Length: 68
Image (cartoon, rainbow, N blue to C red; front, side, top):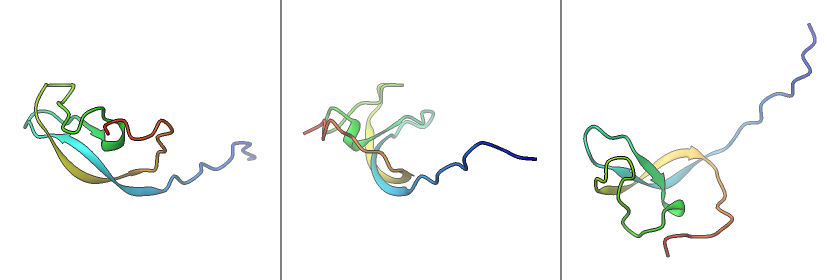
């Protein structure tokens, strides 16, 4: 059978700095270069966030660094 769909393009994964909520029941996080503050607060539970790194799909922030 013939399928017209193009094969899905592989998105490269890169090590990315993120802010992750440190509250036990919350799994909120955001990319560092998309946050507005140097030390953001979790938008889901208003808890403190800690800096960490995760392997995420590559994204380009065309606006620039928002938190500086």
